[in-house]
Length: 169
Image (tube, rainbow, N blue to C red; front, side):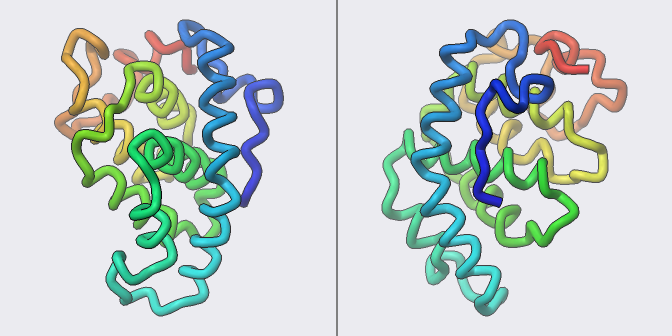
């Protein structure tokens, strides 16, 4: 669960045409910085009471301890992890994604959103929450930044709009 291999190891999923390799490497560097704390918090919460309020969980304490840039990195790591391991127990990770998605003003960048969208479009349709975080992050951007991407919640089933533009399959 703690692996964030980097663009060399997950080339087909994450190094999208149109995203500079140095930018993508920066994403992986930032995600690696938060991954150990994220793994620990998620594991503690998986073993704890699932009905506990988010603020009282290990993930809630971790979120409170991070600045906006680190919180975006945590969101990207959790998004990446949940998509790669969707068949495992991702309940805690999906809750964390939902909490981060509910926060406004985190300063998401176009490249961060495009990277998450690429991950989302590459994920199988069974990963039902795959657009939660990128869609929420995209609402912070101007419409011109992501032409053709619908932030309203209507998925494009044939992936013909933004998915092809970002270089995903």
